[in-house]
Amino acid sequence: MPVLIGSYADQISIFDDDFKPSAPPIRTPSPSYLAFSAATGVIYTVAELDEGHVAAFRSDGTPLGSLPTGGASPCHLAVTDGFVLSANYQGGSVSVFALSPDGALTSRTDLVRHTGSSVHPSRQTAPHAHQVTVRDSMVHVVDLGLDEIIHYELSPAGSLSRVGVTSTTPLGSGPRHLVMHPDGRVFVANELASTVAVLSPGFAVLDVQPSVLVPPVGDNFPSELLLSPDGTRLYVANRGNDTITTFAVSSSGVSPLDEVSTGGTWPRHFTMLDGALVVANQHSDTVTVLELDPATGVPQPGRVVLEHPSPSMVLRLP
Image 1 (cartoon, rainbow, N blue to C red):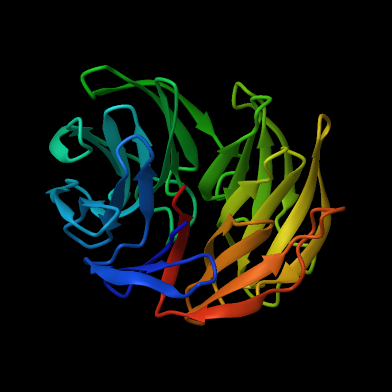
Image 2: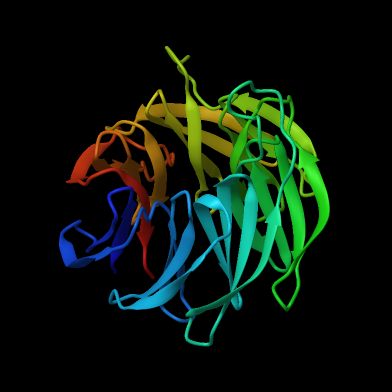
């Protein structure tokens, strides 16, 4: 099945499972984050620009149009039934787009802007929406600038109604991304504090742990996090240490198992592919593979499988 590489190099590259080119790249501005609708076979991408927009393409690269987000630097997407949502980092906003039956973008149905700030003197002077996640009719937006996870309900018409907020602790943590466990718990990568938080199904903070086992020499900023299919392992990428940390997940919480090199620099995103982790290393212009030990679920150090300009995301199409 095709493997897509999003990047800051104005292209979406398309490879087979052996990371050999399988189709011409899709040329589009700054496609740093990608999403896919299995129902329609449509690929969605942000254009992470000052005047951000969201674009849609068929899997063969045929464009299906684009629409402005109304916010700057869109950096994350979520696809749900009939809609695509984008998190717009600069200015801290969330956009909702309606889809036609064939998956094309038809209109922007809502734009919600966050307000406020937090305690970090340079990174939290304004809202910075970094991730949008949808579960059923609930939308959860991780805002790094506010130290908050803001909860919305998505209406059938595509409008967002704010229903609650969770403050991450301590202030200055800078939450970036979250992932939801099948048992309802939530794990959050805190970029500014270099920590991983465990939250209850109701988003109460239960525990906070360092995202690395090896103390960083300078700054370390965790980025993507991923649960194993059986929910027993949590993987967290670290930009700075340039590693993946593995945590064991149990009913009592998470405990660190190991930290290994990605084989590249600045791992912005990774995914699981055929029993391995595939990592987009933005600053080394490489994609690396970390084989997983089948007994422990711990990855081996990464090996380069692909040189690619400024990779930012890896997405395997089903």
